[in-house]
Amino acid sequence: MIKILICDDEVFARDAMKTIVSRKGFDVFTAATGEECINMVKKENPEVIFLDVMLPDLDGDHLFKYLKDMKKDIDIYFITASGTVFTEENAKELGAKGYLSKPVDMKELFNILDKIKKDFGE
Image (cartoon, rainbow, N blue to C red; front, side):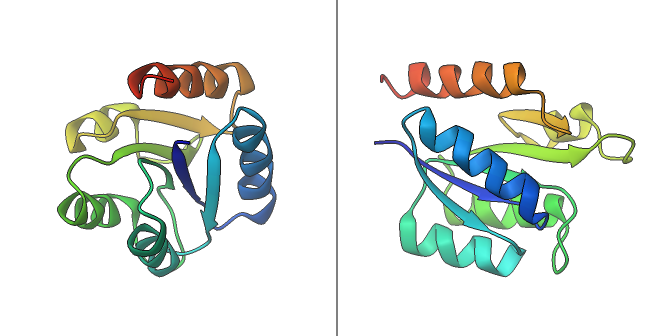
């Protein structure tokens, strides 16, 4: 089963995504801070991370670089509130697999989850 980590400091957004992703057949873990995210990557070794750009302790682009240094083959999708200065172009420049705006569009999330299953041969 593909392991996905959702790192978002907003409880409602994190829990809603966890419910949807788990119902699509993934093994889902969550984190609310950058530090928790790093610890979960070490403990659970996920294949995919949905990473909020704005966390209380670390910003998303620095955390992205750290996580990619830890595990080069991990797929990271950024999540950000619409209207922030972080854009899809920024995500691509860093090497992210994809990008979601908040509030998360369910159709877009389903498309990404289907692509993840296809990419991992499930």
